[in-house]
Length: 213
Ligand code: 5RP
Image (tube, rainbow, N blue to C red; front, side, top):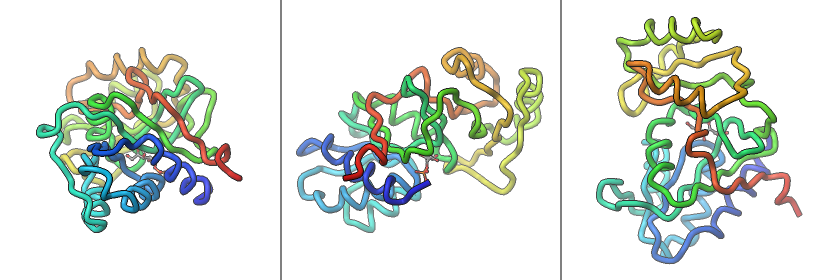
């Protein structure tokens, strides 16, 4: 993990921001650099739609207006980090527990620009434990369904998402077909969001090491 790479990736995403835009903003330490860079051009944009209370606080601190997605309609651009990224731009996300709002905004955006440091690149997704947001009463049920599929579910004890739900991290899966797994897990009652972004992958991936001078 390199903070220089994260900063370079965050700053490089600014080139995708168009004048007058309302920008979809993800969550995490890489996105924090993007928000700082966005603040420097804040007079050129209308504002942002935020994926978490954490990002909302940072945006507001910079004086960037934060809009409700219901009021904006589709967005031209969403910028977010990831925990893993494969060669097809499919991602594991949710290390920061913001996966549900992140997935909603990614779906609403025409272009999803993913900003990562080089340590996030993998050939096969799954070394990073797959986050799954669950309705609290379904935690054990979902855990059993994961065990049936060969995964090792670990409850992220003490973490409550911005939506009032819990997170299970699934260890031990080597995810050969992320679209199929995402589709299958989406059918299990009690799962709110699977941290696989494969059905809707990123459109552009900016990797910090490629941006070094
Ligand atoms: C939050 C996320 C983040 O994008 C992901 O965890 C990467 O974070 P960071 O940029 O701090 O490494 O999915 O839910």
